[in-house]
Image (spheres, rainbow, N blue to C red):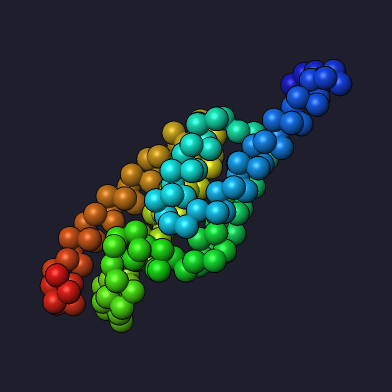
Length: 152
């Protein structure tokens, strides 16, 4: 069992103020409008070594709905914007849809990993690299399809 040290009143207030500041930083990320800005803010947030409460709240805000980023933007739309594809590009192409599904999984894993502590991030990194490598191979396959070549 671990020892628990009871904080003084001043230390308790300082700890509470730090927690509130971390939670405000986590909630501020919901104002981001693109995947790139979300990633930058999540990395900046995690560099400050936030508490588990703030990290958990951030992860919940980002990924509570598996089909949307920040509960508002569907992942395929977010990814097409991040890849600089027009909204109507390559609609109903099975290969592109499969690639976007795979990219969604990788981005969700990335965001979850960035919300984790440094120790857990190291453990999750191996799985993330495996999935990202598969994404690269799938991108090369999709690049050779007729719909993509017609678009390019």
